[in-house]
Each structure stands twice: as C-alpha cells, then as structure tokens.
Amino acid sequence: MSDTIAKLELNGNTYDLPVLKPTHGPDVLDIRKLYGEADVFTFDPGFTSTAACESAITYIDGDVGELLYRGYPIEQLAEKSTHLEVCYLLLYGELPTAPQLADFTQRVTRHTMVHEQMHYFFRGFRRDAHPMATMVGVVGAMAAFYHDSTDINDPWQREVAAIRMIAKLPTIAAMAYKYSVGQPFVYPKNALSYAGNFLNMCFAVPAEDYLVSPILEKAMDRIMMLHADHEQNASTSTVRLAGSSGANPFACIAAGIACLWGPAHGGANQACLEMLKEIGSVDRIPEYIAKAKDKTSGFRLMGFGHRVYKNFDPRAKVMKESADEVLELLGIHNNPLLQVAKELERIALEDEYFISKKLYPNVDFYSGIILEAMGFPTAMFTPIFAISRTVGWISQWKEMIGEKNQKIGRPRQLYIGPAKRDYVDLRHR
Ligand code: CMC
Image (cartoon, rainbow, N blue to C red; front, top):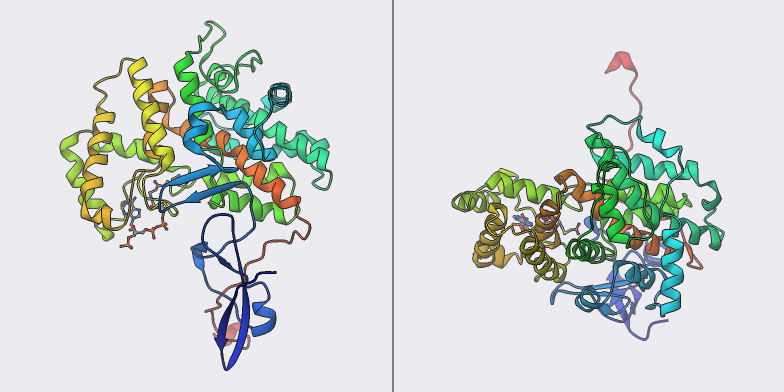
C-alpha cells in the first residue's frame, strides 16, 4: 500500500488514489478501484499518461535521453556486451556468468534450424511478398510446428518457446529474404556468432562462401542490441495484450511483428531510407523541411521524433558511430544518402519547428544507412528490427504470464455513438 494518497473530488465525493512509487520515473496514480467506487473511467487515447503494467525490464528517461536494460545504460552495453548476453540479461534479469552465457549460447544455437516442412510453407508465398508479411505468417505458423512449447501454463514450455523464437527468427527472416530474391535457403551455421550467422544466411550462396567481416558482424550485433527492448512501445503492448488472453507465444509474437510493421514504429527505418533517396540531394532538403512543417501535406520527416524521447535518442548516438565505422570499412566516403542524412540532421536540429517540438533523430535515422551499406534491400530493414526486438517481446510476455494476478487486457471507452434507439423496419427507412 502506498504512503501517499492523491484525492479526487467528483460530484461532491472525495476518492483516494494511492500514489505508486517507481524505481525511476514519475509517480503513478493507482486508479484500479476508481470505476468500482466512483463509476467513472479515465480517458487516455494513445496511452500518453497511462502505465498499463508493472515491469522490471527496461527504463527510458525521455527528457534526458536515457535507456536502461535491467538498470544498465545502453551505451555501456553497446560498448562492452553482445546481443546474446543482452538477451540473457533481458530474459533473466542479471548479466550471465561465463558458464551461464556459454550454456545460453549453446541452447540458442541448438535451436537455429527450423522444421524442414517450413521450407514448403514459404513456397506458398508470392516471390514479391514483403518479408514482413511472410514473417507474420511464418512466425504465427510456428504454433503449428512446435506444439510442445505452446502451453503457457508450463514454465518449461514458456522457456523453450522463448529460446526457439530468439534462435529461429533470424533463420526465418533470412529465408524470407532468400525467397524474395529467388536464391536457395542457407542453413544456419552454429560455429558463427548470432549476428554473423544471420549475415551468412542472408548473403552466402551455394556457389560461394560468404566471409563475415568482423566490423559488419559487430555493427549487426549492435543494431540487434540497440533494438532489443524499449519498454511498453506499440508492438510490445500488442504482444502483452494478445498474450493476456492466454494466446500461445508464437501467435503473440506474430501480432507484435504485425504491429511493428507500421511506418510510425518499426517500419520507419525503411520509410526513412526511402525518404532520403527521394530527397536525393542536399539542395532539395529545404523543400522537404517545409513539407514536414506543413500540416496539410501529411508528410513527416521519417527517423525524427519519438513518443518518449524529447531529447537525442541514445540509441541514435551509438548507431551514428556504427554508421561511420561501417562506411569507412566499406570505403563509402561520398555516399549521397549519408550526405543528405547529415545535412538533414544539421538543419532539423537548428530549425525552430523541430527544436520547439523536441524532435530529434531517432534510432531509425541511422540504422537504414548501415543496413543499406551492408547490402540489405530496404524491405529487410523492418524484419531485422523484428529479429532484434523478439527478445524484448518474449521477456515482457514472460514477465506478464508469470504475474500472480494476471488479467486479460480490456480497455474501456468513451462511447460517442448514437443513444439507445428502436429498430426501424426496412420498409420505413
Ligand atoms: N516530422 C514532422 N513533424 C513531426 C514529426 C516528424 N517526424 N513527429 C512529430 N511531429 C509533430 C507533429 O505534427 C505534432 O505537431 P503538433 O503538436 O503541431 O500537432 C508534434 O510533433 C507531436 O507529434 P505527435 O504525433 O503528437 O507525437 P507522437 O508522440 O504521437 O508520435 C512518432 C511519435 C514517432 C510517431 C512521430 O514523431 C513520428 O511519426 N515520427 C516519424 C516516424 C518515425 O521515425 N518513427 C520511429 C520511431 S523510433 C523507432 C520505434 O520506436 O519504433
């Protein structure tokens, strides 16, 4: 029970609202009993002021631009850790010891292959299908292939489902890519790192080995780590809501992938790169800045702005460093896209519209440049985000299912439709 109580006065009555204290972040008014006691709902479309759950996984301070995974700053993890170690941290709450990490890595790599029958499932899709469409279908279909990890009430099955998804999502995304370019699927190679294996599955062909460059491998690992979790964003909330009904974990992650696809969320990396290509040259930037400010244009600068960050996205800072390293390695110095991106960033950061609305570059502003330089088509950008976010979705889903008094998510509404009325017979309408 909270020591601090907020008072709500309504229609001559006073209601006590306990004030919950988080480890970090603003206090939270506990309104769980409000409807029962006062017969009112609260109204918050877009959940801008609503904490929908308790969570001990990730914390964001949007005003200062801080992101913590289980308390550890993202900058420290990006410098010192790896994606698989971060997966362990997000899933189990602590950094692993060396034997724990070795065991976890072994468990993940032993699950990287997909059921052989899945290969035929892929062939049912059109070649020109967007890989995100393929992923929504194939990940949802995992429930049909892995029956022995769909019982959400069995902690062991939940664990196996988590490992399976972290292990198999890169394989599925790489298969979606290979299918779209008409090349044969490349099986996972467990001697490679998590990121290296993904690059190999995407770029190796039977006729020629692919030598994984350590710099590209590190950049891919960082992209994965930086996207691994982001507290209660739209796709994570989708996974939680789907999971709250007791749906199996594969169906829940498929729902998360569907939500991530939208251009306001994970689809922004593809949209951002397409926008940079459309702008094409530095001299056209002012035209696009003016368009972004014009509310009637319906155009937004992709890769700018964030619901929570009202300062530089800390992930964007790390991503920018990676972009420089990758372009240097690949000898790309005068890349026109990068020139447009850098100039756009400079102009937007000095522009009164963007300053006053606290619109800073977000993670997607730079990730697309790296992925394009690595040789990925834009359609693969969001699937790579999905691979990376899988561990966050699964950790949040496991956290929710493990709660003692877990309830189905069921928001209420402010009904503004017609008042009750009588049915009118067809001949009188
Ligand atoms: N370009 C131009 N104006 C913008 C932009 C933008 N990118 N983003 C927000 N605004 C304006 C918006 O028009 C509004 O102006 P006003 O107050 O005059 O009506 C104000 O800034 C606040 O915008 P909002 O839509 O109320 O803010 P939100 O918190 O609902 O939206 C957002 C956050 C990320 C959806 C939005 O900033 C956006 O659409 N950005 C572009 C898409 C993008 O880059 N998304 C990736 C987010 S990071 C990756 C991820 O987490 O998935």
